[in-house]
Amino acid sequence: MVRIMADEASPGAPMRDPSVPPASGATRPSTPSERGEAPEARWFGFREVDPNAKAPMVRQVFDSVATNYDLMNDLMSGGVHRLWKSTLIEMIRPRPGMTLLDVAGGTGDISFRFLDAAGGGANAFVCDINEQMILVGRDRAIDRGVLDGVDWIVGDAEKVPLKSRSVDVYTIAFGLRNVTRIDSALAEARRVLKPGGRFFCLEFSRVVLPVLRDIYDQYSFTVLPRLGQMVAGDREAYQYLVESIRQFPDQESLVGRIEAAGFGQVRYRNLTGGVAAIHSGWRL
Ligand code: SAM
Image (cartoon, rainbow, N blue to C red; front, side, top):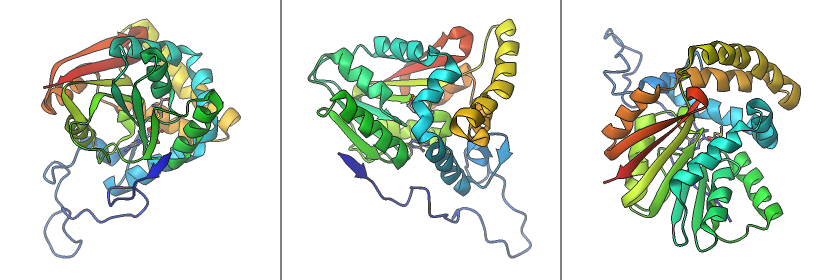
């Protein structure tokens, strides 16, 4: 079942930021930090944007890539994203009876793997802001014969349409860098997790091996946008993906933000020399 959750936090309807004073008058404009705004809310890749415009712009990217998303993932990473996702599932150790919430779950990769590994009797909610991604995922589920145990929800990571303390595991894979306000998404993760539940974030991170860093930079800034143009007919969407990776907090900064959201024993594990990392924490 696909549930479409309409709420005022959803993108589409541009909203005025109530904390920003009207343009009239002689007062100087407030700075983002004075307004309590998250620094990442102003950045769409390397472009500075109005925070209210960011979510609709991100949604447009994933509208554009949805049908080619899985193929592009394999092409871009040479299949390595599959190994990273396998590592994530090993760390979760799925068991029957567990409930997973996979936010920014896209086409359902993490949830399918979770349900397979649990071996029956587990449940997964796939929540994504983009209906196109959810619809592609639901079709994949039908093709795979996965009809029970998955609920597909269109919703924002910053306002998850689930009850507080309702899930055992929260995952967000290659999603956190796309949300407008990382700290709001982390607060929501804590809210929906049961005490003793676990948080996992799989995301691109900072390469820690200097020799790999140069090769990776070359590859991502030259090859990826071209690949996006050739396969998905959208160079800009893949340019955004590359830039958004560079704007995302590094491993240690993200630890700090997860701790600030109230998680305990926050750790990370680098994958492929820090190209990606899995952060984890306990909901106390
Ligand atoms: N997790 C999937 C995977 O690993 O294959 C999909 C990752 S894809 C790179 C990023 C996803 O984040 C997209 O499906 C996009 O629609 C979703 N997304 C972006 N902003 C979001 C938000 N604020 N709330 C929920 N999902 C969001």
